[in-house]
Length: 295
Length: 314
View (cartoon, rainbow over the protein chains, first blue to last red):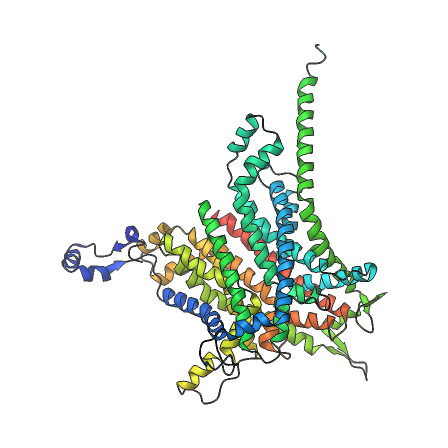
């Protein structure tokens, strides 16, 4: 902290003889030095918070390597539960379904969000602009459980009318709540973009489509990738809406795990969770570096 | 010729207006896929929920198309089947009360823990700030169910807390934390804490420390500076964080289901129950609208506060 705020550190020993004493003893000077950014106890609470945030996650990962069948008694290291999870047909089936839904939902929502971001940035305010903005962010405002039962009712009606009970319902639901997550980074990217390059392209007789393809799109690409990744993670993680919308036999990995938690839990659940955790960390890390490059 | 001159500028204006109209139309067209998907699979169905709350429940779930306000009556009251007396629906009221109480406590605790944490991050050197922030972001993007499950591992009777306490000789029998309100509270605090830290950090990052310095120059002590300078300046972050924690806590479903068990339900679980074993869709719909209404009130308070503090600190 001392080095961080060097220019803001005050020696309070300003009156004559105190300053002399302070200069005589550098160590004493440091205790008299006064950091304006310090607040008593804040550092301790913060470190406590970080420990608190990571203890459960670390415990979870550690016990996924337990060779015994318990998630409480440590019996030594093994990959046993990872192999068990890999060979569990239900886990393979539900995780495949999760990835299929997340892939579709992420791609469709990112395309829709990219178009919407192009339509709502770099323009003078027009009637309906705020409406579009609010409407796109609406899924973030409503509790998931409410959206979930709304879709349960609505899709139940459609199921009766059409007789179709496939995965499309889940994909549609996921796409809708992924749009705001994909939209935000793309919009942020567009707002920070330099307009002059596009003007230059237009000056050089590029058609609007060529300008978009050769200039705008490459420039906004990092935002699109970031949006795609966020949408993917959000879809992969969803429990509540999926639990309510799914038809029989359409469990995703999270809803399958929710069902399993009611029974005797073995480290197999820890193993799946750890893999999920790893995927989230990889995607978030990529996202982090994509965003950092920009600044 | 002389007659044409005055019409030239208006012709130009017409062309410009036409171009504007075309531009706006193309912008609406561009946003239409996103708007359509959200209308179809998020906003539109909410209207159906409102309609369903005024219908009669079917015998095996679903509804009968017969208007009725009975579901709304059931939210708060119940009729005795034998003597037809009307009393308050204690079960619903206690669940509603638990939801509001636990969400409120979660928000307060998240603020108590989150404020120093955000302040700690915001006062780090610029380079290490990103790393600390990253450490907050990772749990945030981890599956909610997995995080809840991780909390369960810690607070179970055979979990770390009880094992350590027993080994230290502080207690002889494990404390029952699972399936209590305290378990839900700990779980929600754990799950939603990053939602408090992130907006707080965003407003603390912009904090002008010259103002803090001025406070000290005017002989304020650390606590006075915190209370009279820092807290008023980061108030928008405090309000944003509180809203971001309060709203999902109120609608929490997974955390109370896993940590609270069947007895300690919250509003989210009560709603889900009406579409499962309860088989009372209109009541579930009415409860959903109730939840939405509480959320809307919280959001309105937020918008009012946010615009007011914006006007003050610009």
